[in-house]
Amino acid sequence: MTDSVGYQGRRLRSAPLAVLGVTALAGALLAACGGSTPTPKSSPSASTHISISATSFTQDFSAMTKLKPLTAQGKGMVAAILPDTVTSARYTEFDAPDLTKAFEKAGLTSSQFVVQNAQGSDTTELTDAQSDISNGASVLLIDPLDAGVGISIESYAKAHGVKVIDYDRITLGGSRSFYVSFNNVKVGTLIGQGFVSCVAAWHLSSPQVLVMKGSPTDNNATLFAQGYNAVLAPKFSAGTYTLAGSPAGTWDPPTAETEFQQAYTANNKINAVVMPNDENAAPVIQYLQTLHVAAKTFPVTGQDATLVGLQNILSGYQCGTAYKPIYLEAQAAAALAIYLRAGQTPPATLVNGSTNDSVTSTSVPSVLLTPEWVTTSNMAATVIKDKFVPAAQLCTGSYASACSAAGITG
Figure (cartoon, helix red, strand yellow):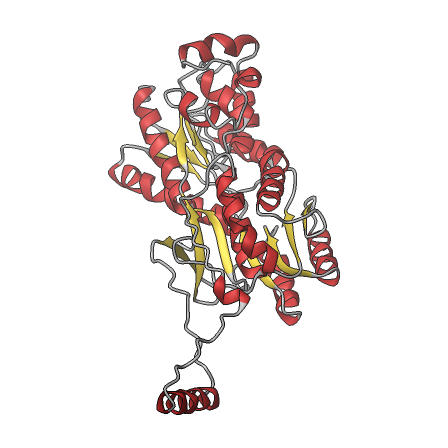
C-alpha cells in the first residue's frame, strides 16, 4: 500500500579524516602568515543542484528542459521497458511517446535512451533488460509483467551496478531504487466512490454487485481492489448492497467477459459490476447490450480513460473512469532516471511518498501522482482539455449529440 510519508534521501558525505587534518593544518599556517584558507573547488556533480517537484510537470513538458545540466553530466543509457499492448492501449498510445518526449526534452539523444515493449512476454522483458545493460544502460525503467520477471531483472541489474526504477507497478520482492506511479489505492477509491455515486444517480434499488479485479499476479490490481473494497465494504455490511460474487480476476478482456457471463448466468439478479478498467468493461458492456439492457440501468466502472470507455460513459453504459494523465507519470519517471544517471539523489520535492514492499517489508521511495474520476460532467475539462483523447475521435456518429450535451467541442 502507499502512504504520504516524504522520502528524505539526501545525505551529507563526510570527508576523510586525513584530508580534514591536512586542511586544518594548512589553514592554521596560512592564518599565522597573514594568509587565508583557500576555498575548495566543488566537483561538477556537487555544483549542479536542480530542484524539481512532483507537481512541476505540465502538458508542454517544459519542466524537463531544466534537467539538461544533469543530462550533460550523466553517463550511460536509460532503457525503458513497457509490458505489453493488450492490458491497456495506454502503453503504445501514451507511455511510449510521452517517455520519448520527456527524455528528448531533458536533452538525451536517440543513442542515450530506448523505449521498448515486451509484448506480453516475460522472456522478452528479461532479454531486453539484459541486452540494454550489455549495450551500456546505467538506468533501467521497467514496468514488470509480474513480480517474477521483475525480480530477475532487478537482481541482474544490481549485479551489474545498474539502477532500476519500477514504473507504474512495483515489483514485490524486488530491489529497485525508486517507484513511480499514481496512488493506486486512490485509483481504487475513486472507482468505488464513482460506483456509489452512479448507483444513486441511476436510481438503482437493491444493487446486486459483482466485484471484479485485475490479474491476481499484479500488485496494482491488489491495490485497486483494496481501494474500492474499502468503499463498498460498509454497503455490504449494512445490507444496502449485496455482494453477488468476486471472480479470480484478469487483465485479459475476453477472459473478463467469460468471468462475467459465468457469474451472470448463475445469478441473473446481478444488476451492477465494479470493473477495474475500461478494457475489461468494454466486452461486458457489449454483452449487456446484446441482452437489450437499457442505458443508465446497469452501473459499470472503469479506468484509463480509453476512447471506448469514454464513449460508453457518454452513452450511459459506464459510470465513469479513473483518469491517470500519463504525461505526468512519464515525466516523473524520466526525471528520476536523469538524476540517477548523473549519480545524484533525487530531491524530496520529487520523491513525495513511499510504498510498502510487503514481501521484503521495505519502504520504497516513491513518486505518487494523483488520478481523477471522469464522468460526462468533467470530461471536457480533463481528458479533452489534456488532448488525452481527441474530441474529433470521441464525438463521431451517435456520440456527437452526447458530446454536445457534455459541452465537448472540437
